[in-house]
Image (tube, rainbow over the protein chains, first blue to last red):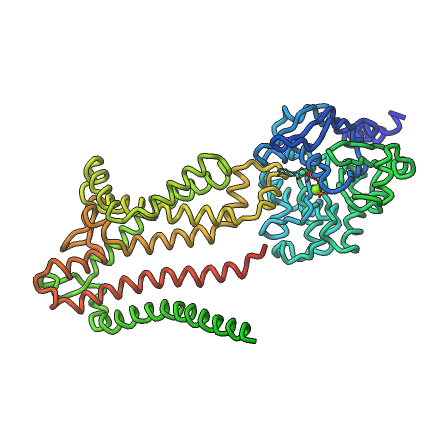
Length: 273
Length: 287
Ligand SMILES: Nc1ncnc2c1ncn2[C@@H]1O[C@H](COP(=O)(O)OP(=O)(O)OP(=O)(O)O)[C@@H](O)[C@H]1O
Ligand SMILES: [Mg+2]
């Protein structure tokens, strides 16, 4: 099996094979995570292993700490005064709190609830990340921009107007632009916080399709309020309940068909949240 | 019925009062403009703008005063702008929410309320005296820089805070450092507001007399300033001198109004420029 895969001989193939072989390994391991805004505890004792590749959906009633959980994973909560995380979070085996946040956020990208393109051209939006990380060569940037827009399924719509302002795009296109922007720094994990909540059904299903495709090569963690969306798009599901307790985590099919926690049963049956 | 009637009358009275208050502002401006133009236009001519004063400043032009005011305002903005923008960046981006920000904001607001003559005396004591700059363009520009500092800080801070948080988050989430975020995203978005503050500062600096009276202004100069350590003539001080020092002050009435008209035109066109430019920018930026 080993020789079979590396047969073609190129190093690239070998690396790809090695990455694929680690599918079963968790890419993010959270252990005993507590989160505080000042004195208020928002996440309590969360432990979870997020598997590599595929889509992990995070669900739960409003205010239960889903966004907070996501923002812990790339340490974006640090910009909020008084916010504090305790516990261990390992990313690819490394303690994220010991990593440089700049390095961490380059490897764990994020897409926000509302599309937030910069007031720049489409091209400059996508090239922003690579430029910030020191890439200046035009040919390299061109390549990255094209690659990222293709992966975000936006290329065909914008390839002839890369110089136009990002604000000239529709909401759904803007959100895909934000996905492309995040992909341009080649992250291993992509965090998405309710990426479809401000979009119409058609734009939402486009984003869902994009997400599915991305999941082949990177790990997507997506927060969603939409049960159907979670069922369609995810391989694993985690359900938070109020108080920031992760009540349920497992393969999507299993969680939807036979949730163990009674409150999660109610939540999934649409009885609250 | 009577109740409704009473309300209608109250409404009408309030409308009249507020309306006439609004009108009186316009009227004041119109009166100033009319008076200045009517009286001043008699003196203003090409020679008036390009020649030196003659015969004990009872004839001739105001060229050196225009140049002097230009030097002082430029100097003030060059000194003040970087300082004010850095403070505003620090206040809005780095120290947001801390006790220091509140303390400094009180300080800035207090500074904005200090009478300009106080700045003049401070400049005389500190820049002219302690730093031994003498009565010079440099000392005057430094004094004016202090005077307009709070104006530019406040405008810049407001402009920076008006930049949506989502822009900052977007950049940080891509792995940009905070400084990269400020430099490449926040500052460009806030630039129109910051530059508006700068131009308001310049027009304030151009018009002030008290801060330069003891620190930079010359009664009369037969030549233009050659270095930052020279004294200069300046428009507002020139008016002041012609109106008070000259025993024949009534003979220079036209010249005084002419000078004031030039000053007013300068300030108004700076302000108007900002308004026009800003509406243009606002039409382009949408968030
Ligand atoms: N910046 C903040 N400062 C203080 N408390 C906060 C802050 N952000 C969130 N919280 C609190 O933390 C709790 C969890 O918030 P969070 O945004 O993570 O919830 P959520 O599950 O994402 O909710 P939603 O589904 O509405 O987006 C809430 O009770 C909220 O009030
Ligand atoms: Mg949320």
